[in-house]
Length: 417
Image (cartoon, rainbow, N blue to C red):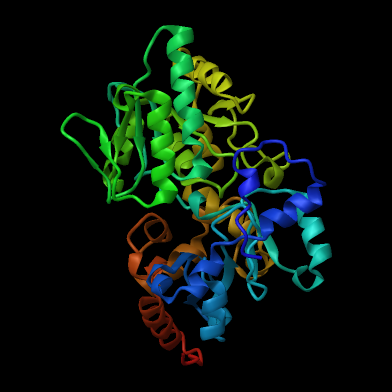
């Protein structure tokens, strides 16, 4: 356990039985990092798409998710009195938190779920949700900016780490130039504040750790004059992301294996078609799609030429794609909460007037939210509730839970470190 599946990063066809592949994937979870390194405890998130509610004599547990549920359930044994607790591995693995009520599994894969629950019969009652934190995207904050000129051919928001296969993308840019007689304008946001742009537009990554630096060195060797092909942005503030997506003809992900990937969701929400390898997370997904409808294209083969051809197909036929339309039908926060409520028996049995797929129309929920938190449930979901719905760090989580336990008159035991 705790082993990153490196052999899967650049190999789309692993020659093993599928059960062994699932075991390899499940052998790594980011949960472990947060448990082993106390310096990361301030980064533990506590996200609550549904708050605890008490209205007209009816108490309803909230729903929360975190990558630190093992720590939280150990430290706060009474947490389940307030919340249905969901574990998040931040990877395409099943989480390791055996005491959680719910798992984020990224995708609905019945064969994988059956295998997992047969292997761990003590977890047979854990509800598996085809979601991850990347799906908790505010589709109104990350949205297309009207009348934005398309000045970027290819956009990526991704670390320069090996799992992202940046060298394959670099080779695809060369293939595109040779095959289609044009140098693509690519912007690549690497999210590394320790890097900076030189006056000539090239990227100074000398302060970056070797894990990312070595990849960028390889890219420089492939491209020669890298800045001719890639405009590396050290960091883009979240408030500016929609502008970049709206300026782009397509968004490209080079990974074969990781978590659900927020970049894909952001691109579609901004109506930017995505280009992703058909083998992306294929062992975790089974038949579950990376995207729905005509939101983009799958790259048929894990080769630079196949990637270049797929980029060309997308950017020369923009009229063929409707990523935001598909995203709003299947994704976004409203659909996220509907999936949670409709999939967990507790809510179907305890939420007054529950109707499938109608969470935002539930009058009891809206009235309870106004009574308890002085806002509509819509406002709670879409951003006016950060003090309750999105908390980071054990100290702030502790404060929130103590406040809520007092508010709802729930006995509370806090295990000391």
